[in-house]
Image 1 (tube, one colour):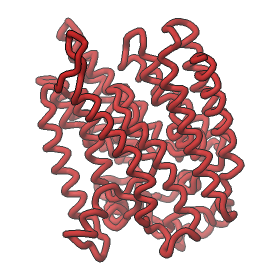
Image 2: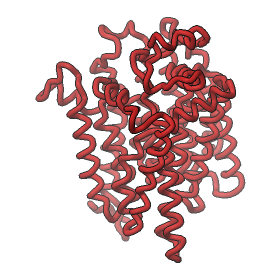
Image 3: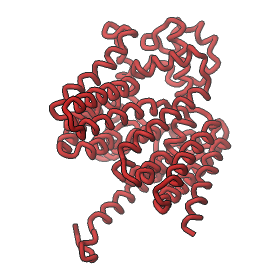
Image 4: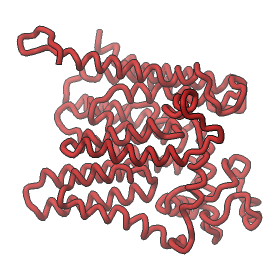
Length: 443
């Protein structure tokens, strides 16, 4: 009976994920609501299937099931409409191949009028007043894809392939006979599948080298020979540098990685050199390629977890400026890192979690950054959050709000209460553990 429940839950998750394509055209009324309902039911099926996966004995059947489901989920997500960010990716690749710098010219600049006339997706580009905000590694990837005339499908296949490669590395990180059971919490997660294979966000291109770098650091610590320790430390630093070149978020992991490498932490200088070198083709340091990013993050606010509580009580932020918040994030990351000098693996989860909780912006795909670590460290609250955050897409149904992109209290509750309950449940479960005689005792 339990085996039947597992297969039914898997089938339900695949079917519900495929059904999302019926509700992904958010120009029509009620589509966002139906999309969110279907996604949350898909998440419930995901929890049922992944929780039951442990009953499948480790072996060929479990391995085959793990990979077949991971690949199938991504295939059924491919027909979904991409996010509006996708058109920005294509635009910035096209701008580069037309001989312009995406860091110097915003999409609505007059000099780009000839490029706009040849770009079919112009009307769907977001934030046209800002020039490029992505790191140079990402921009070079966009240019290469544009040079080959890549369409939506090729972008999605690339992002999904990087995601599957990241899963393979996650399996190596987790290790053990039951590694597929833990990795399924990431590999089968509907938010992960939708973000990369469905909505075509490029964050998987950052997650892959980030995990590769972490795996190398583990190997560096475990290696017996000093030469091997240095080789893996350098390889890990290179991988982390590539991740930073795609998205800056792995920068916050550098203090924890210092603890991981010890006296070989000098290798992490490579992680900073690589994005600097990739910036040179864009004119850095003469050209201020990071200026637009600084302007963008200074004022952008959406779906934050923590600061709205402060602003509504003791610290009003009338102009919604983020400078002080970003300073707090950096200081908090450094302080949290110090608590994990002897447990750097756990520190990766806590540092990333701190940054996400304190971020003034929390798009759903941002959670994919922490989900590999949550699967590795078996923290269920982040998995619950990855399902409840689908309610974010109700923002696209502006009929629900007096002011577009302003979160009412009921929506914040819908997103935040489930993971908070999961945290409380986990604290209760760990506070009382069975002792050696089998009775309960407070830990």
